[in-house]
Image (tube, rainbow, N blue to C red; front, side, top):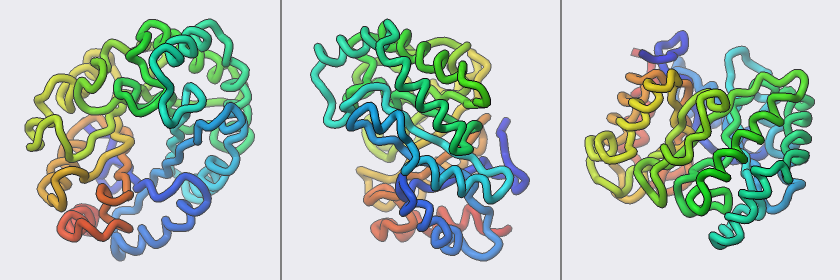
Length: 297
């Protein structure tokens, strides 16, 4: 089963930048795909997590993309939201544990209420929101491992607060990295009532080397799909791309086929080098594979 669009493809996009500069690059990406190619319909942005003002005032990162989405019916906006600040570089475990406990107790509710109100005002009331992405890893302060119970309760509070704002029609994406990482992502799952879809960020890198490895490994792509089916949820792939193994068109081909064979809401390829296929010039064979996939048959 797949949630394909009219062209028979899962809605897709490329991450080219969070603010207006990313929006400005999209016409070039569409032209690069080729005449009459399937058009990208997903705009993806990330809020910075330097301080709470970044959460309360998302305008520079959401406004340009909300306008882009409004231009064409059927476009989708995806917004990654830090749950804690400062989010990068990550704070030590003791600090994270204390912040998660404060969040679970409602200490930060007002920041997310203001965020939701601003998203609605900007025309992003239908956005797919990703609070605390890659929570099972170690890259961000908003990680789960120091206190999974507090993390889950905090995620639930964020969703509850944001859903209480008039006019919102948000969808919430629980978004892990592929594999076990620092903690199995299943230990961080906050509940079916606050999750609309299960996302997984997956790059061509260890653990594993073949695409079959990525599917079959513990807490890998296969586990994501199985867990989602058990909980009655679709899946998504908010970040994916090449990385450790160079220009591998077979990975791009297998990844695209995998995503389009699932009940997937959207996917976004990360175009930073060495992961990308459009602006990144390191992967010409993979770029051709990507373009061919979306070329008219």
